Length: 227
Image (cartoon, rainbow, N blue to C red; front, side, top):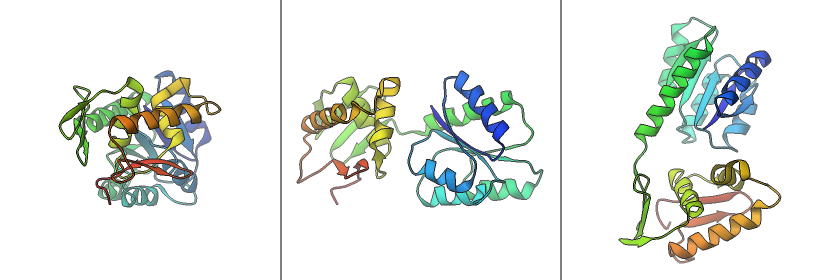
């Protein structure tokens, strides 16, 4: 699981990074709203821990822009204030939970686990686009009702692109998700091209009815339709 923590307290950021990395989370951090935007629009996260009182662009504005951009990643808001108004504004803007400082690491971890469970339970078990379907539970794929056999890597690529349908996935994000610790930026480009090419052949992808579309210089996207 990949978490983004946004806070301008360096000591707290370091403490949270160390804590969650020992829990086997992948952690990225940002110290102000502008840096948070850079992270959010470059990488796909499973959860965002977002302080309200951060420099340049405050946390509520970051949350608002996230939701306007269609980023539905669960967000846990942090604040040093005991202001109920902040909590209400955050929840109205699309925050999923709220935690006031100071807090215990155990409570933060429990809140994060609950949000991640809720996010996973709300996910659709069957991912679709056009006449292609992927069942995340049975791990079966079909195209126009006919079964499609994929390798585990090809399945992971297709699942990740379908899960992020209508959103461009960068090559780096895709590689990190599918290959994990085996990701090597120097060798990955050719390996990924081979897997994408094989996957396109197996699902009957073509220029006339493209399913996986290449966004030159960025990555890939699957749209809802052929448009």
